[in-house]
Length: 245
Image 1 (cartoon, helix red, strand yellow):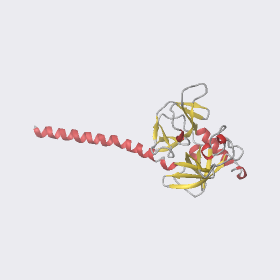
Image 2: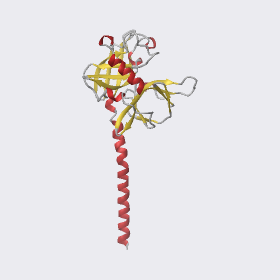
Image 3: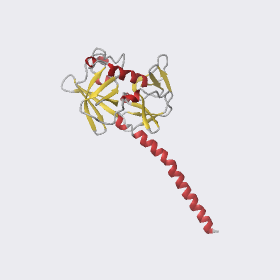
Image 4: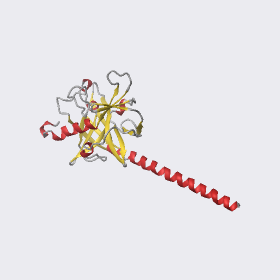
């Protein structure tokens, strides 16, 4: 009898351990999927000489993409501009993109001169000048239809946060942008908002600004969505070479 009870307890313990192991497996897979976003985003540092001998430095974030043998970024424009409110053609003298332990010099290639006004459109494409860093997305990633914004979203903003965080807040579609009813940090600007689908990282946009919708006092975060990213990338890729930078 005692042996039977001992055997039953052992089976229950073994069953509990097995259930815990099986339950942890999806969580580990989810964590691995989320962490796989890291090499697809970078921190942007822009430096310019200011009055006196000091330098002005701005930091932001970007996501990486590639076309042919060239690597580009997609992120906010204001980080790399030095004019009043960014409404000028004064581009930072030194721009660098860092992904993990890798880094590269970068230059602003889109929008072209004369159209770099963050008050109208705060999106920029940088071209990396020192070869491949990270794991850029292919341009086809931005062309595919993925439907509405999923409930489970994450933010990767390595220029401001060491961890990738979940975004748990309702979102409202606002043209080619999304308004998320959660006020993120200004340091998250340019950070990639993404979801996982079958273990793959799907970019849904990047952080643009902190504020409110017209006629709404609620604070939140404006996200440039997939439509805005696709349109902007296509404009750049289809422009004659003489029009770029």
